[in-house]
Image 1 (cartoon, rainbow, N blue to C red):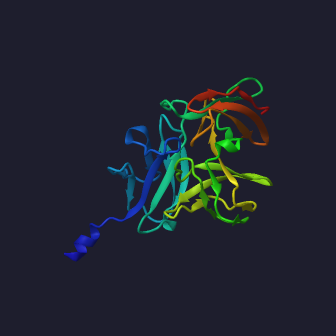
Image 2: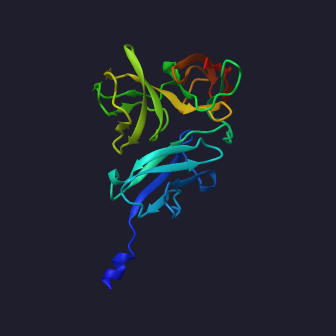
Image 3: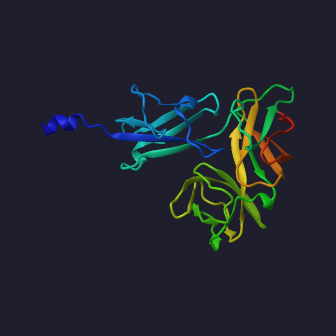
Length: 264
């Protein structure tokens, strides 16, 4: 009898949680589809909005996320490296141009085109608020050293979630950082180690990293308590070609930015 019960026991291999990076809300089943390549069985949809894959093994697999209102994502997941008791992966999604924008959200919309005016898909974009008045938080530890993969910050303007991007800046330099996770004690785990050291008071400015869709369009969202108008610095990169532009955004609005032209 116990042998039959063992054969019927399934193991949870992966739990996928999708999060809207703009609003911090969980994403409903009607807005996204999640699949694991090579997996015949579809995931179980749970009431909390997560997707559960059973008995998927311990190999490296490709996870596909498709949506009409968010940019599609394809990412490798090493199932064998996940926590066996809680194999949870949280994936933040960026809005597409079809995102149903509600009043009060802040973003810039941009189109990227080639020298001949043709739309350029899959151009990497990153942008940040360029004023201290827009800071989401400040470094609260005495020193964050080069190579550190975790930092602590205080004086938050709004809550943060895994996947959110910031520009970490002090008087000597700056770099983009993306959060891998937010620990219960408030410590921020980073996806990549710090390139240099920062001292207490360094600002975490709202930022975003995204890409253009097949029509060359992108929505770059910003979160937090923002000034009525604030300066944005954006950079587009395609191969070795890079273009930068500055622009004034308005809090609570999606502001159209002039078209960025690439030479490639």
